[in-house]
Length: 260
Image 1: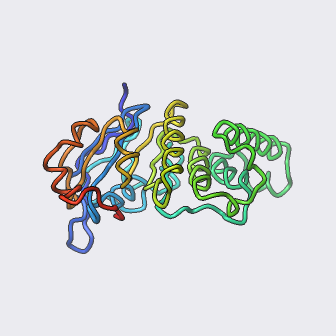
Image 2: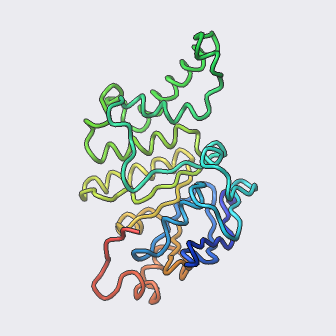
Image 3: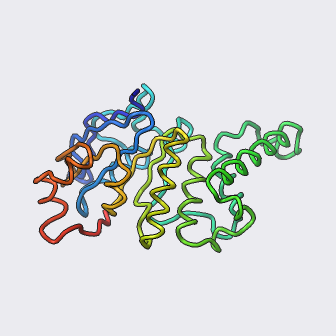
């Protein structure tokens, strides 16, 4: 299994306060890897460094053998990394297919003049993008909703659409930021199956999630962050019985809702 992503000693300091310190982890091609930890542990800060939202103060982020730390978010998407957000960020008054086409257009191969004059190149590129979007939506069982407005979809389906839009950028690695947040148990179960289906398509998944049922059921490996540092890593069964993790994350009262 080749390593798709290698994060080496990344550190982020905000105004003298170290939010993330010397964190290292790896994600292999075709894996589902989760990052967990208590509130304020620094997980979202890590995601923001991976996707170019925050600059990295130290360390490297290597994707497909190339360093990508501190590149612009658009460059990182074009390199093959896409993300979703804790709060769904769809275009609610656009149709389902239009939301997916937004993802397609990051790699579209025509210029402004092609668009202005509706050239043959523009028409062929747009036709191909539409065909890819329809194929993707059908494959992800969203085909019946193609012409529906995003705002009219049930919550769980909106989550799937947001992930579909991320995949439409031609991403090799999709970063999911609390995809099960706000879901009922049935929606969470459907989400688990959906993520496994993505993995079967050859997409690699990096996940932040507070729903331990989701994390434990679908993760190949788990990294645990506490106070900006990695405190544990391993297979789900190892993490579930790790005393340090239980103390830091689960506490004596069971799983706490994670809103990092």
